[in-house]
Image 1: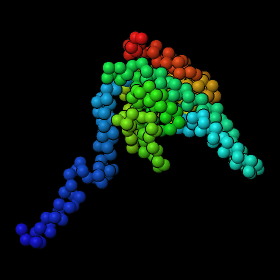
Image 2: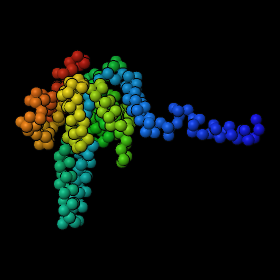
Image 3: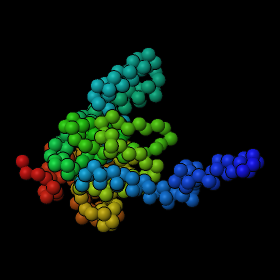
Image 4: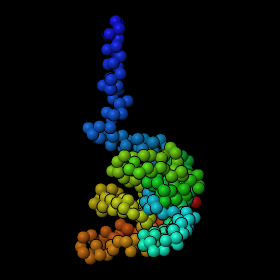
Length: 283
């Protein structure tokens, strides 16, 4: 082969067209391959969970801004200090009031940790993993639930999502079960695929989005009926007037039966056990 032919051959081998499709990241990220990417996001976590012996899960939703008490106290102290330095600043006054409310809600971090510990202590036996805690993988309530499982050396799952601002996984997820998603739709599917109960702690738009999607899917029988537990009855009753929806005729009276309430980890656990007695190992 002469020098010019060799140069042309090398140029051919260096082109993106010559690259194996599975190795061509730019190709895999094109709009036309979105369907393939959706399938990959469905299959990868599914295969891993099968390998890890995950049979059933307990989904925990909740606010990423809810902090452990010590952190909430520090944030309140900082807000008070800032207001003392500029007492006429209305924005700082609002921040202090919010910090006070967040300190009150720090109790939910403790409850979520207790719940993670309680459900994870029961059925992860003999390599078969039932009632595995699964969260969105972020901070706040999600971290607390994963942390509770970690406290008792149990597996737990985190389904992180790529966002415009960085979201690092919380440190308590089982590393082999720490996933990252691009697509919310596929992530939501994985929340439900093995779920035998879902617990929604106080939270914001993300928590509400996940809660209402689950209720809609159960109501329309697109997924099996499982307990949907609203943790913190006072918070949820103030946030959503369920009776108003019934009285207005936009949901049925029977739809209220899809929802249960709990104010302690034990109450939530009792609801889960009552609906899943076949999965609970005898003491």
